[in-house]
Image (tube, rainbow, N blue to C red; front, side):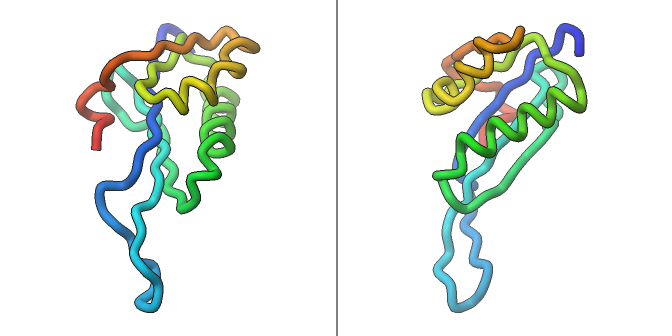
Length: 108
């Protein structure tokens, strides 16, 4: 994949969702994957249950690697993502970098 740096984030949607009138609205979780240089969103996943965080992150990144190759590194600002990705990075050539703030295009 070359010299590509990704930015990865987990967050809550800024807007609530109410799937049916009889259900209470909730704020879904979002997985975001973007190219740092272009700001282009490479992948997104919207899901309801926070317990799915690790499963979503690992499956989305592994699918991305299989389809596009392994990028140089990913940047995260979230300690949860750091914990989820540490083992994957130790087993691959994929580097992980914790930064204080992701680029504006990644922030909701």
